[in-house]
Amino acid sequence: MPALAQKRSRPVDKRSAARDKLWKSLLKWYDREGRDLPWRLRDGTADPYRVWLSEIMLQQTTVAAVAPYFTRFLERWPSVEALARAPRDDVLGAWAGLGYYSRARNLHAAAQAMAASGVPQSEAGWRELKGVGPYTAAAIAAIAFDEATNVVDGNVERVIARLRAVETPLPDAKAELRALAGALVTADRPGDWAQALMDLGATVCTPRSPKCEACPWMAECAAMRTAARNVSAPRGEGGAPAPIWRGLSGSSATANFGWCGGRTKVCSVAWRRCRRPNGATRNGRAPRR
Ligand code: SF4
Image 1 (cartoon, rainbow, N blue to C red):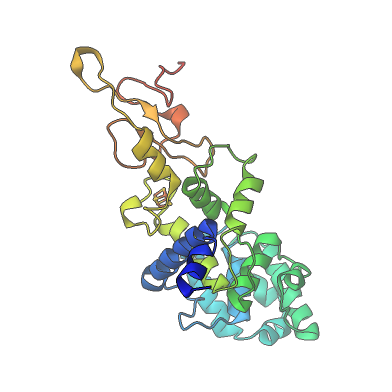
Image 2 (image 1 turned 120 degrees about the horizontal axis):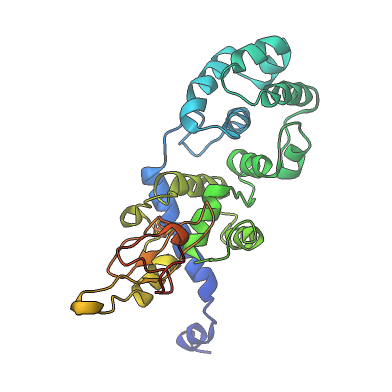
């Protein structure tokens, strides 16, 4: 068969082509704009101890609060063995002020388990350690071992809800969002992928006022596309454009977004709380008061 005919007969996998596009644009953005964090090595390597320590500290706690604690811990206990040897009260003392003290107790117990039996090499192995839940295990396995895990937290749920225009409120949407996020994970740079998604949710696709103009997924984002297609600004009384709520919205804490007619930017106001000038709802009807 001539080469050209062979080429033509090859089926085009549109889904994987679309996924590749998302992958490339996000990773390109991450290589350029990813956050410099004390626990993050930007040379393509990752230290499991640093990753684990940071992920435990980041549970329920902000990056800004964690950073100085992480640096102090690393200076004082530079390895998992050093942490395992430390008196538990010293670890609890160094944790003072970070909150959720069960994390420090579990951290110390997990360090002793790892010093005795070795550092887990997989998501399943990390799940066996005290204080490591499903999200933390997936994050450590991806970042430290490049395992193609599905790392989904509230930030990722919000980004995926917008990217794929999922309107189902949380928690009902959790399984769908997890599946959609998982469909984007590949064996190529899964650790960077997980961190890139985290960074996108933390710095660009934020709960309020997402910075869509700076988003590497602006062209692919279903929320953006649907808005462009659906938003209209019908004429109101007196010929003035009357805002109308169409496009997309989410009523959960993590998926608040949408558009009103006449707007070209994503709005971060949940539609139930939206008070556009004419009080239009997303269906164009006056809200119940
Ligand atoms: S284009 Fe906007 S809404 Fe869509 S993923 Fe990017 S920041 Fe979020």
